[in-house]
Image (cartoon, rainbow, N blue to C red; front, side, top):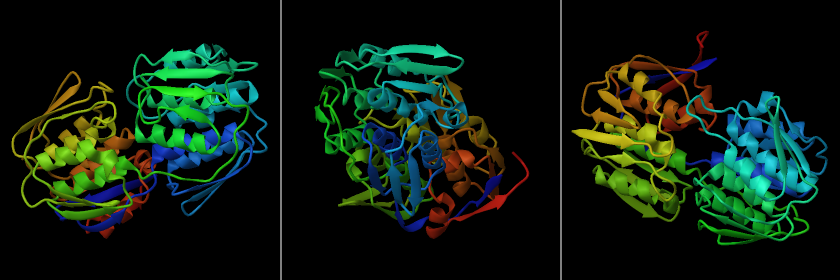
Length: 420
């Protein structure tokens, strides 16, 4: 088991390249199930979640191999239609294989998912959408078992905008017979990138980037190569870290458009920001102003940056309120931040923060991916050393995070520990 030791008090300065999007890769990889063949997925991040998805694909009979940031994928020999609990429990995105397996083979058996240890995130919308396309869906012994001789196009409205359900139903609909209309679909960049990938494969999709997707089913798709979009959450995390330390940073290989709402909020706190092509420059010279943060579906403020913003506001002057409208109980990082001396009060789905209080290093326990990032960021500004345990959560979504921070001047190291 590894832990991170962070020594606070250092200003971040320099340039850092942002990796490919975790959530983008986790959608592209199972899409390869739809068309047998060989794929090369470039700009793929070397992450625990990508390894897990690759293992899952291999268990189905595919072959995945990551070399650097290039993923080689061969989906020609898929002959197993069951996604085992041992793999699916590690990551909710494993559920993405359900729609493609059902569309190509007419059957799928996928364990109910696991993932981060916070909040109920049901798969009802996935199942209702597939049933609307004509699938028979049953839950037995912890597995979702779906069958369909041939999926049929249909209308389906997502009661709640869901990235995972939109991706799953979209993939299944590409091979369904007839037309499918999806309304209140998710518009996150990862879904837009998936839709464009499917179009390259031969799918017929209209309305890409909007909440209404129209899919005309085709008889078959073909394998193609693709470049994974940059990770907007990693980018946001590094920008917030630089602002917290009153630093100066340039992040490279990023799509600034995906971060528009976040960049506006950072400017509101006093950051100087300049965007040039695929690079974002940020400079912060003063103590940040306290600014409220309310998460929303894209293009709103991402829930995956809520925890990091909580950490940021600990350094601000004044009071701020951070509200998560997506996942109401996504605040497991708060008790750990309080161990550093943070003044945070939880009221329902909001955190009330009194900023500017002295933080002092302590031993902290990670509970989920983005909460782990918040602990690292807080450690960067706390006095003394902060030990962060259970960083396997962090490794699910951040590639070489300690090395990237070191390149910016942070004092942070990874060490082995017997503690869990």
